[in-house]
Length: 168
Image (tube, rainbow, N blue to C red; front, top):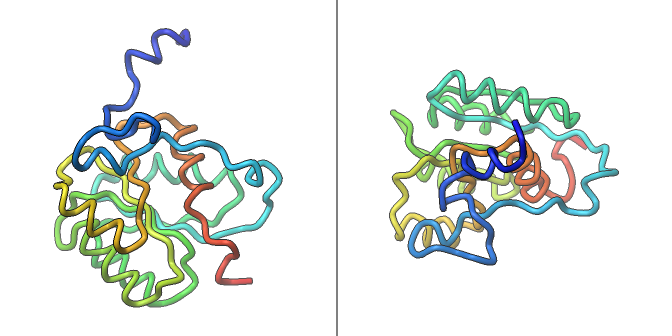
């Protein structure tokens, strides 16, 4: 695929640059920039990918695992919260719209249980402006829009990792 074709398949406004925020829910979304320390960062984090779509869970795992992190998956928010409560999860990468417990409810529960666990939302839509305001109050300021490019997810992971893995 040539670079110009990629532009036509770019993620929707929900994943555009922070320098050009859209109104409402999209104002919190961004296309991540690679933090300079990530290139040489060899620390291993435990990342939990949560999505009711098995293909999306597997795709996220295939993108994140080569970065050197341990990647687990969960099918819904309830399953994910159980994993977080067992300890050792550093970052939760969660879809927003899921059955049983959506990404917003999961984020609230995770942060209430362990404020040290970072949460990142991946969404194809469905976010209301009040969701974004409440997510920002919880410290979640990055929402990655679907569809996304591999590099966008890699960069977002780098931006959302805690300073140190919980397992160290």
